[in-house]
Image (tube, rainbow, N blue to C red; front, side):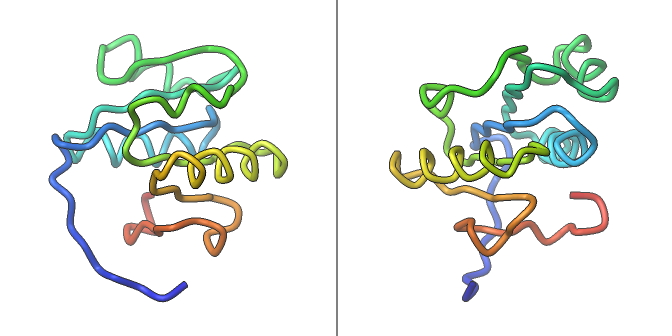
Length: 119
């Protein structure tokens, strides 16, 4: 992946995080910290995500991902533990003209995060 460094104003960004585990939790927390509006879609979620949802800091949709979940998201994070789901999320994001980060295969995405120790 060749790089073009950009810095986004977090409060101006709507993000879809697909996945509910540890990696998704870390990414969601960093995004929320930046002020982003975060929606998490996953059939099961880690305690950290549930806590953020209960505190009203993110929107939680507890079910499997469907293509329409991308809707108004400007950034999409595919962070499940299922390779086929991450690939589907990436393909749908590209088809919808969205920027996508694929946690298990960053080269498949259109952007990478730089806070690798926490994101």
